[in-house]
Structure formats: structure tokens, C-alpha cells
Image 1 (cartoon, helix red, strand yellow):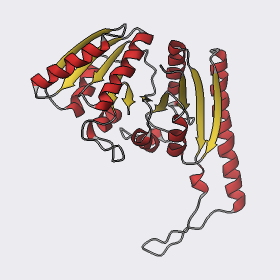
Image 2 (tube, one colour; image 1 turned 180 degrees about the horizontal axis):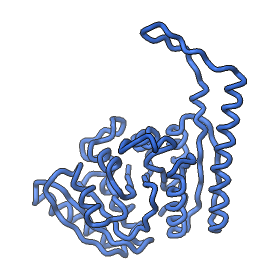
Image 3 (cartoon, helix red, strand yellow; image 1 turned 120 degrees about the vertical axis):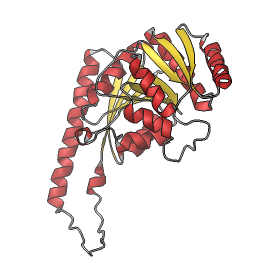
Image 4 (cartoon, rainbow, N blue to C red; image 1 turned 90 degrees about the vertical axis):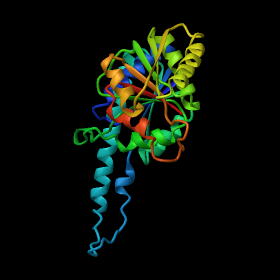
Length: 278
């Protein structure tokens, strides 16, 4: 299923977690790994911008820019070397790549030739953030066309998977990806349908269970009234799930719009890895 996995790393506190999940899934699916780090050269693309007070920022000297770019390149090389050393030690098929550009754009473009993309929840400046998503992950979640696994700092073995299901096209894809993950990791699956329409919820749960019967996995389901934005996260936390799988957009989501509230809330506040299907 996931024969080529793209790991996007930046040397942040999340890099080890991205690698850890990548290693575990590569072993489970016999996958090859592509490690990508992007040198964000936008910082060197200075433009004179006149503010309300008429102030024009002064661009740094060419020498300063050259030194800064050199330091950035060296940092990227060190990150990739660390990743390559670890993956070689694990005896996994892999390749590493350093690219330059806007990280979200480069990652999205490279993900087109991967079966799964793994990204940290936040980036280099995670220490300065609270529950906000990193700018890169927020952009990639909107634009990527491949399944995206968003991981936190801590690595949790995948043994229990919670699927937030609403019958939408992308939620149906989440069933497929979760089914393959459950088979490969011997995980248990729970399908959670949150709706005030009990009859509709029962219908969704029944169709989800029927589909998942084709996978070698333990499956159960339940209908719960409430607010999906909050209750998927709280249920996963209270019942100690390791992974939440959801469709990136529900019935009424527009792909190019800002992330839907349920998707955004789960990504921001979950204590688990989150698998988004597009």
C-alpha cells in the first residue's frame, strides 16, 4: 500500500519523530523512504517595502547573505546526514534530498510521487508556538493530494486506530488507509460517527464496518451525539488511541479553502498522530 514514503524533516524537535514513524511503517510495509529537507531561501529574497511611516528596510550586504546561505546549507546537510546514518543502521532502502524554495510548495510537489507523506506537527520554531499549527503543515494539509501523517514529538507504536467517519469521499479513503495500517501493524480499529441523527450514524457505522471486514483487523463502531470538532479528540485521548484517521475535508469542504474546522481542531489539539486522507 505505502511502498514509497516521503519524510519531510527540518532539524526541529519533530525530526526524530518523523524518522521514527517512517522507520516503523517502512518495516511494516516493506517501503522505501525518501527524506527531504528544504532550505527556505525566501529569507534571502529581499524586497523594499514601504510601510505607513515610509520606512524602507535596508537589505543586508552580499557578504552577509552569502554567509547566511552557507550556514543554512550546512544545517540541511547535517540534518540529512543524521537521517541517512540512522536509516542505514536500520538497513532500510532510502534516499535523501536537499532542495531550495518555499518548504510547503516543495514538499507538496515531491509528495506527488509518494504513497504517504509524514510531517511533524510544527517546525523549527515549535518552542515559540503553543497549540498553533506550523505554517508549513497547515499549507501542505490544504494542498497535498496524498495521505498525510502528522506526528507529534513523542513516538507512539500504532496499536489502536480511531476513525472519525462521516460518510464523505475523503472519510471513505480514510477507511482504506486505516484498514491497511491496521493489518500491517496488528492494530485494533474503532469507527466513531458523531452526529445527532442516530439513524444516519448507525448507517455510517454499518457501511464502515462492512467495508473493513475485508481487512484482517479487529473492528468495532459506535455512534455518539455531540460536536466532532471536540469529541473526536476527547474520545481518542480518554480511550488511549495512538492514531486518529479522518478525511481532510467533510461533505461541504472546498479543497482550496482554509482547513475545515473539524480537521483544523483535530490537528491542533490531538495528542495522537493524525492521518489525513485527501
